[in-house]
Image 1: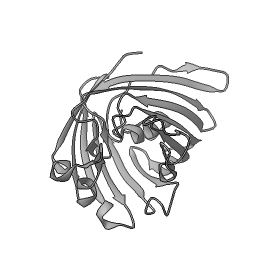
Image 2: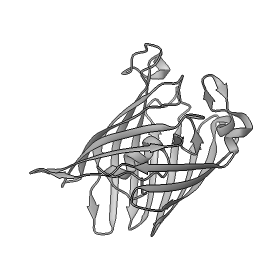
Image 3: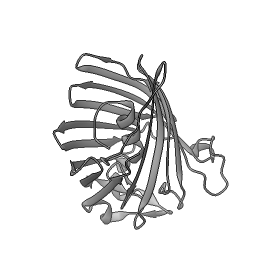
Length: 238
């Protein structure tokens, strides 16, 4: 999706954690707007890491946004990157704008229905859920966002900070994953290009021990985590 500071981009971008163009079809209600999105991609690019390798992904969602700034939505992906699971996200928050300025306060739950685990129970307690608090601020085409794991000590007080800037059809992104354990920390960068309203290319690079130590299907990615990734995403016109 294009990196703009709104409910449709901020939360869905967090879910797929990179730049992939999504098509949205708004439907106006008395109090707000409902929009939908669906797309296919050659990979699930999560915070600079290809967590669906070697599988392509299909994903989509629905969002409700109120003129006051309140929002809520859901998003699902065919690949979640954990034990070959799918992924289902639920999120809500408050994202008002004041002229060129804006801010966001929100919550997102990532649900992974695998191995018959309780999706509404945190992974730290043996379940299949992760969750973040979201704090963000923006000015025109520049946005800064922090995703703070809700399970503080069990997650190593993990948080992920991003900076995004849009220049015409191009998007510039930088992210850093911070943790009490330095072996879990890494940085990632990407440049995206919206070739059309439906087709987006993203070149991404992760760097650091934290990227190498990420496990997919209980196997650490190792050196290949730092290989550049080219994501190609097509958004269906809805």
